[in-house]
Image 1: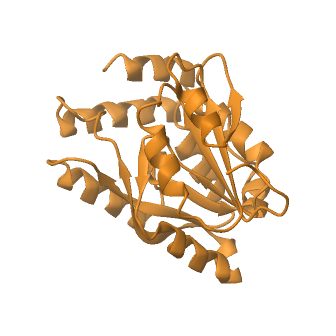
Image 2: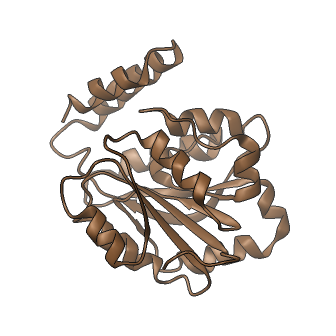
Length: 233
């Protein structure tokens, strides 16, 4: 999956200690039969994440300390693909994801938009959360980062890429995107790991996240927000 000249698709994956989950996503990506470049941006993993990525033939960029916005930005800067898929390392793709993305690429009008997946959370008990997230994404055109972003590289560059924020990088990116174009739904599922919601109330988590978003809008430092976010776990 190493990068090649005239690459059709680049996949950018920010990582931090994802050796257990990353191989599953890398396996899903093998369904893409045309030219593909896989870029793993590691944020200082202490496990075998980097080794896993290199064994799979991915290009690896390393940071000493995680900063997902900066990691995404680095991946976007080196991506050579005509289209870029930004996706979290704990995600899984539907079996027909490659067919769907190929359909999007085949119609030039689709390059005017950015695209997102429908969120599905692995495990039971998250249906209400899935509905809420997907309603928000479809009505407000404001998907979250774990729903993936599929975008033509020329449009991504026009927007200015991801900002190097420790948290809220997906919302900030969406704000700038909305001044030029909109997000559209790929109408295909992406599956994310349920570890963030296990052993905690979905409602309580939603309230905590809402408070963090409010603090960000007030201009608080995203490093502070990130530290407060991880104190929950």
